[in-house]
Amino acid sequence: MRKLRWVRDDDGLWDLDRSTPATLNGIARPVPSDPIPSVLGLSRGIRLSRPKQVDFFQRFMFMPFVPSYSLHTPHPQSPPGFSLQRVFSLPTFALDRWFGTVLGQFNLQKLASGIKKNGFRQPTRQSPWFQSIAEHLSDKSLYAVDLCSEFYLTPDDSLLLSLESYGYDDYKTPRKKAVFHHKFPCHNLTLEAASPGLFVDKDGTFYDVPLTMAVDLASVSSSDSGPSYHICINHNAGSPKKIGSQQNDDAMVASLQPGLSATTAFSFKNSIDIWRSRAPKLKMVQPYDIFLSNPHISATGIIGGVMTACFGDNSVRAPRGNGSKGFGLGVRRGNCALLADSFATVSLSAQHGTFQKMFLDLTRFQAVLDFPSGSTFFSGAASLANDVYNSRAPNLQAIQDIYPNTTLSLQQQVNISMTPVIRFLHILSLTFQHI
Image (cartoon, rainbow, N blue to C red; front, side):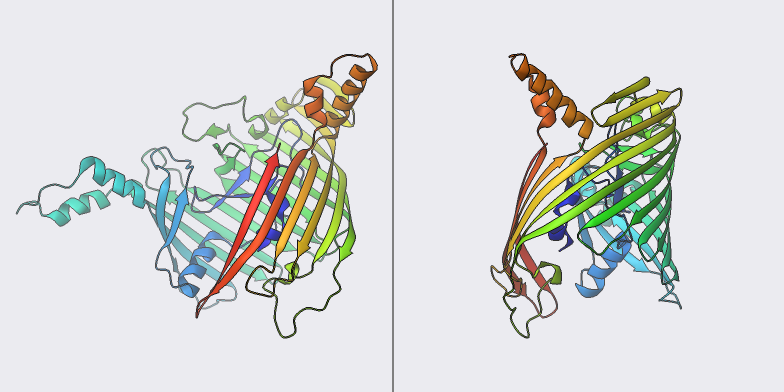
C-alpha cells in the first residue's frame, strides 16, 4: 500500500535505496547523478529487512520456499531468472531484543540450464542416476547464504549486521554490512558501512565500491506542509568497479570515485485541498488502508535547494574553476569541489472512493511536474527568450531544458479476494513518465 501513497519514490528526484532481487540483502543504493546529485528529500528510515520478509511469507502464508525472479544480476556466472529462498531463524531467548536468521538461496534456473546443457548420465551399477543428480547439485555456484542479526538496543535504537556469501568462483569476497538506526522525536539518524557497497544506476548496471560509509540525518514531520531538510555524509574508499567487467569505468561513475562528500537539501512544501469529501464513511467497516480512505482533490508545491561539497577524486564531476548559471553553482579547486542547485515540483492528486468495499472503491490519479535543476531551467529559458527576441529559430536543447519531467499515474482497485488466512488486493496501475 505504501506504493500507492508515495508514487514519487520512483522518479529521479529523491535519492532512495532501490529494492533489487539481484542480491540476498535486497537493497542497492542509487548512483548519484552528475553533476548535481539527486535531492535527499525523504528519510531512508527503518525498513523490514529481506530475511524478515521471507520469514513473514513462511510463517503467515505457509510458503516453504519463497520464489525470487531477477531480470538483472550483478554476478556474471549467475544467469537472471528464478531462485528459491528460505530463511531459518536462529534460536534465541530474547525475541524482543535480538533476531538472528540464516537466509539461503538456490538458483533453480541455473540448475535447469546445467541439466539441459550437460544432461543426465545413463544410470549404471557404478554410477546410478542419483549420483548424476548429486553432481549437478554439488555445484557451489547454485547456492548463496546470508547471515543476519538485528539487535534492538533500545525502543529507538537498532543495529543490523549481515554477512552475505556466494559460491561463484570469481566472487569469493563476502558482502558485509552494518546499519545503525536511531529515532529522534523529529529526526531519523542512519549510520551505515558496507564492504563492498552495491550501487545501481537507472539503466540497471551494478557497481561495487570496495568500502562505503554514510551518515544520514533527515527531518521527519507529520504535517503535509512546512520545511524539511536532509543531510548526508558519504565516504567511498577504493576504485568502483562495474560488476561483470574487469576494468574500472571511471567516466560513468565519477560520483562513486574515492573521496568524501557532504550533501544537504532544504525544501519547503505546501499542500492545498481544492476539495475534500465530508461525507460519512460506512459504519462498522474498517478501511483497507486508513491513508487511502479520504476522497479529495489536492495540489502540492515543493521548492528547495541542494548543495554538495566533495573532497577527493569524486570532485571530477565539477568543472574546473568557477562556474555558475541561473541558480546553479559549480566550483572546483584541485581535489575539492562545491556544487549547488535549486529544484521545484508541482503535483496534482485526486482520489475517489473510501477503500472500504471489496470492489471498485478506490480510484487515484496523480500528475507530477518535476524541475530537478533550476540552473538548467533558467539557462534554457534565457536562451529561448534570446532566440525569440532576436527572431531566431528556437534551440531544441533549450526547449528540452525547460520541459519538466512529467509523471502521470492512475491506480484503480479491481477487487479484494478473501481466503481463510489472507486477503489479496488487486490494483490496476498505469504510469506514464517522460524524462
